Image (cartoon, rainbow, N blue to C red):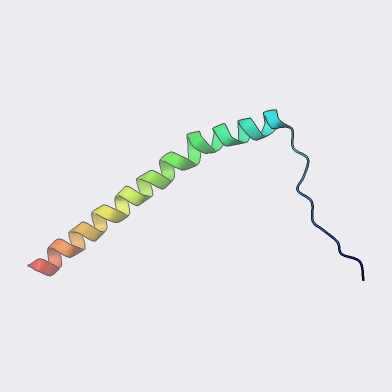
Amino acid sequence: MSENKIKPPNIPSETKKRMQEFFMKTSIPRILEEEQRRKEVESQQNANKEK
């Protein structure tokens, strides 16, 4: 039985750069916003427990 290795697609560096820039503009702010929202909910829950 021969080993079939999966090779990544050959993506030009310009395309990779644009994909990374797109991710930085779209996903990073959304992830940070969700994390901030989660922290706010946790702090509210902790404040309610202390009452």
